[in-house]
Image 1 (cartoon, helix red, strand yellow):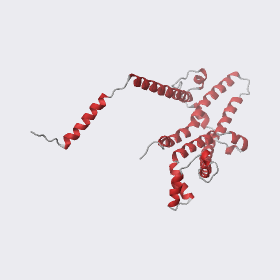
Image 2 (image 1 turned 45 degrees about the horizontal axis):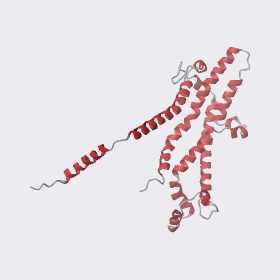
Image 3 (image 1 turned 45 degrees about the vertical axis):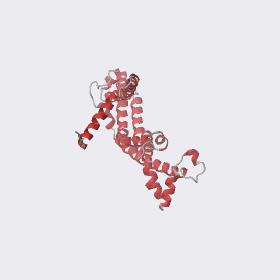
Length: 264
């Protein structure tokens, strides 16, 4: 008697056979040891980065006395908003925040645009020494020219979309540099209304540190405690824009890693 196996039964038998083969694959002791080492290393790296951030955040919400005494670890002690209230009470801080945002956006756009404009001629075959510096596939240029595309059209429609991950990383670096920069403003700006946030906060710390010309030791100690608290509050305040921008750029990091390694 001949039995005919239905297609459904045949399909259901395949996953079972595949699962049996999968179960036969076992990790060796060396593979498990390597995974343990990798996980331990990643955990250590996370702790090295995360613990200082938690300490700074906890210190910014602690009392000046607790911060100066070193009683703060990873949780606020004598919870208070005095550090943030002191900083934000100064109208110059909000103005400096707006100035820094403008400088960051405008500076990043200008710097990224100039970088693209400089990279474009460097990638062309007719530029002397381009093979030593970089190499854009000439096939793309030839294909675009056959379709009647101009240089500007090729740059906008082909080069920029392919270079999005790289441009995003470059723009992030420019943005961080613009946000953290204060030395140029210290040299060239005379009006306090144009000061960026970093320069405003620097002046706040300097004034609070040197404003103790009094001979009252108690007042000097209290002033120093406030300065210690302000340092942590200022770190948190100045880190907010970068923390907000990074999630929008992080997805381009993954794309940049995969470019050239995955086909189809």
